[in-house]
Image (cartoon, rainbow, N blue to C red; front, side, top):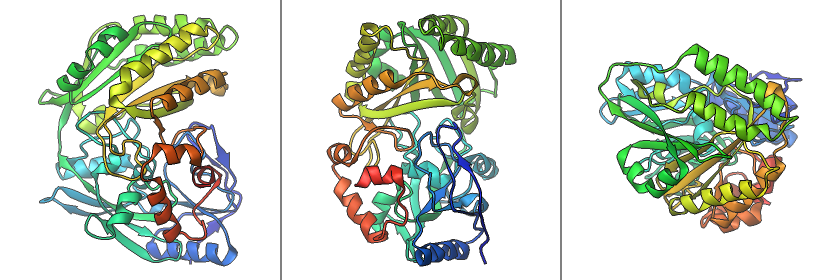
Length: 440
């Protein structure tokens, strides 16, 4: 018999959204998940499945039943020949990496944060960078999903293919993802090289940078021309690190947090902070090497508000220059560093922001020093306007102001996804207020 808890408060990692589910469940088996859904049907309750809670939006919030998958976190099978691993959807990537290390395997691409579940990472369309690599969900070769009525579907390209095409970016609205089979690659090491440049240089030579490095991204420092270019590539070099507590923490966190807090009273400081920290921390070449997952992952030290939209790759230069021009024309609108720019291969997943096009993701950020909210509305709205103008699609895990009308324009397969969702969950058991804005 599955045990539920009352009075549990859920808050996402960034502490930007929270909720009070009526009941909170931590099932340990498929049978217990089925029990929770049966209770929900009897009592006509909504159900939300939550993973690591890292989404900076309210996509995981509910006042109904919340299912936390953290106890369904086993590696079920490793197929060394095919280099595939089958896991329960509640496993954290942090716990999966050492298991893959043991078998000499790795995932070919990862996001910046690994304290996230496999089910959540694919469901929200998490991505990294590398024009030869798709979003993380493109590494999924099969999955199992429990529908609202308690039946389980096995999905892959050869079985329930239409559901598979939808469920790899499922938004938590198709059912409960139980297991996921991931295509791995042989274990590899990466060398990360970062070096200073200018916005003009990087935008004029974008194709050449994309060819030069397998995992290329860059950071632009708003209110300046400064850019930090980051290459990550396969290497045989011994592990080495450029990190240093004084520069990374004393300066890069504690001093920065103090100055950002001060800038809430003196907003004009922000441009100076961006230029000063570029000079302090990003103005020389740095190298570090390690196992791939240790290079891909980095620590998010600040609570933050973020937006991250995918635009067609060929619009990168135009869109970024327009964002820069907007900030120059409105000196009262301030933008924290960095604007992170990454690149991803197109795919055929129905609600992937990279559906049928190679994409550039442009991530903007406003930190919350000492948990304090910083005025960001003008920046947010101007950014969204520019992204929409260039055919952008928002990252599903991150806060945005889009509604069904927007998504119908953005996604050629939106109606196909809606039909699949309605078949799998005809009563809308897996919806919440975030998803109702998407689908109604």
